[in-house]
Image 1 (spheres, one colour):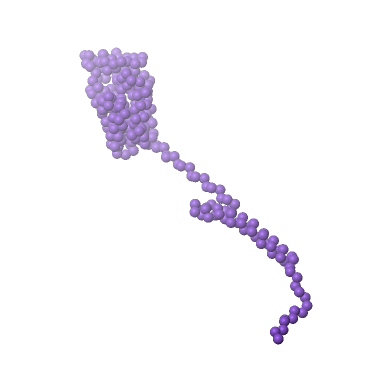
Image 2 (tube, rainbow, N blue to C red):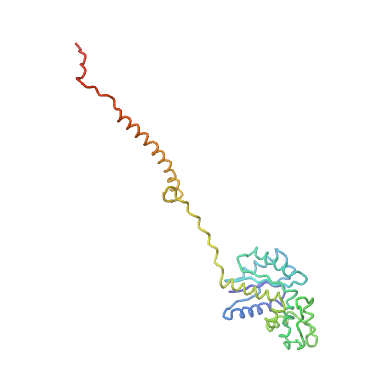
Length: 270
């Protein structure tokens, strides 16, 4: 199976496939899933209905077999719940037959790194004194917060650090500290389950057979019309026959008198 992703930046293009493959391996190590990014568009385009439908169509046409679609954007100042529901609704309009998930990182993808900050100590430029905030997803400017804990005060760069941090961060720490990341985990698992074990299509209930009238067998539509006439015909017979019978019985009961004696003389023609 495969998962085609729709993201908003080059950093997510490199990082999200690594992160999703880690989640898949955690759910089922024996399962191979091809994860690739099909569309990289700015968020300003993806939050528009027609543009998102177009992106979903592009990603769906790129699937080569059984697969699913995963949409990931940053919330920034938007409500992640409302934005996620809106994106999922629009995506379902285009390809509702496919398993689709829409995840909105609150506020940024980098907030997930802050939630798992202890697991990133000593990795790349991260110093050993970094501590996860009490509420990582409430931090405005997660990239800047990470940059403060870089050696030599080098700024955080999504294209240089995002994939590396996604491959190293502790998934359980990120789940506990970032609800939006926990939603990503649930959605990826749901997509896998729907692809590996698709729900059977609901079977339509057969129409109930009409009850045959007066014991006559139920036939085809044409036959039913013909048989439905029979009760009417039989009623005519049952009414008419007794009348005939009564007429015959009355004639036999009182026959006309038969004359007795010699036949009358025929008149002479002379």
